[in-house]
Image 1 (cartoon, helix red, strand yellow):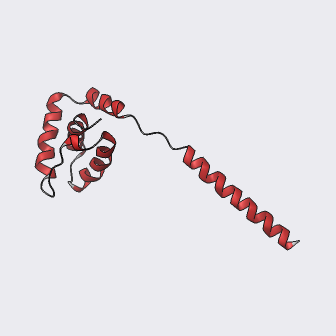
Image 2 (cartoon, rainbow, N blue to C red):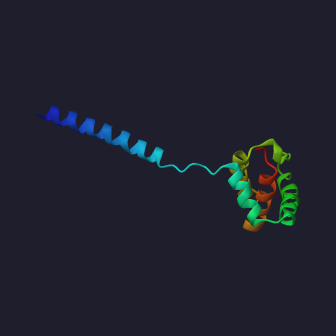
Image 3 (cartoon, rainbow, N blue to C red):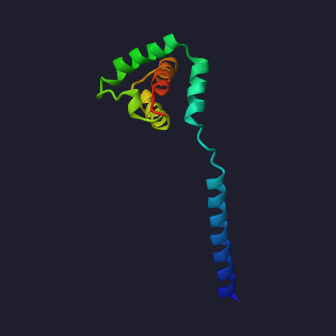
Length: 109
């Protein structure tokens, strides 16, 4: 009787673990398309703000490492890099947004 109970509990736990993992995996939202991200930036930032972003990017990023041209990475890759590096560079939200606008606008499609 005890052995049967252990088997039932073990199978239930295994099924529950698989179901829970599958649910979290399928509930992930798809990342926005690069064109959607660029369109969002174009609606929020002017050409002048993007140029300010270029100046901020050049002034801050090359303090620690060589500058990679925006065209060297895709939008998705830059999104990951910029999120992490804006914090390291201690950019405020306004400056980080301008840098993001400049870099993403010129990123590889």
